[in-house]
Amino acid sequence: KQEVTQIPAALSVPEGENLVLNCSFTDSAIYNLQWFRQDPGKGLTSLLLIQSSQREQTSGRLNASLDKSSGRSTLYIAASQPGDSATYLCAAFKAAGNKLTFGGGTRVLVKP
Amino acid sequence: EPEVTQTPSHQVTQMGQEVILRCVPISNHLYFYWYRQILGQKVEFLVSFYNNEISEKSEIFDDQFSVERPDGSNFTLKIRSTKLEDSAMYFCASSEWARGGRIYSNQPQHFGDGTRLSIL
Image 1 (cartoon, rainbow over the protein chains, first blue to last red):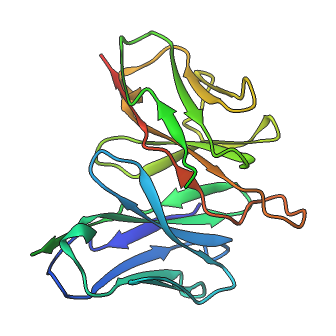
Image 2 (spheres, each protein chain N blue to C red; image 1 turned 180 degrees about the vertical axis):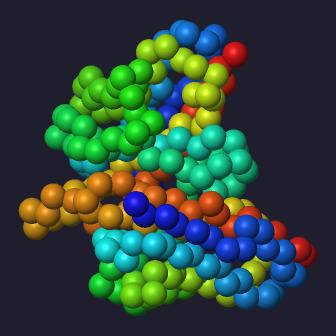
C-alpha cells in the first residue's frame, strides 16, 4: 500500500528566501507525481505534474524534482513571497488503482 | 481556464439523512474522482469513475455511497444514510484521457473547491 509523507509539516521563512519542500513515497512504481497548493478552506490547485520518466519539471519560480528509485520528490520555490503562504501537498498516482495518494502537506508561512 | 465546479459549497444535514453532492467536471475530461478530507487529516481517495462505471473504490466507499453521471455534464456523489464521521470536505476531480489508447490518464487531476459537509 502506497504511503506518502511530507516533512516538515510546517515551515516559516522570511520573504525572498528559497523554499524546499520534501515528499517521500514508499512504492516507487508510480505513474506520476503531482504537487498541489491548498489555501485555507479552499480546493486544491495543481502546480506541477512530473511523469515517472522525468527527473524534473519547471513552471516559473517552481521547480519539482523526482527520484523514483529513492522514492522522493522535492518542490523548490525560488524567491518566496507572502502570497506563497499556503499548504503544499504532493500526491502519487499509480496506474493500477487509478487514484492519487496524498501526503499530509507542508504548511508554509512566508513573512514579509 | 476551464474548471471543476461543485455545489453546494456547504451542506448541513441531520444524521441519517441522504445527501447528494454535485460536480460539473471539465467538459472534455473522461475520468472523474471523489476525494474527501476530514479536518486536520490527509486527502483520501473515495472512488474513480470512467466510461460510466466505477474503476476503483476505497474501503471508505461502502454500500452507503454511490456515484452517478446522470447526464453529459454532472457527476454526483450520494451518501444514503449519513453518519457523524462523514463530516468532511468532499472534493471532485477530473482528468483528461491520455491519447494513444492508454487506459490510465497521465494528465493532471483538476480539483473543484469542494463541498463542506457537516453532519449534525
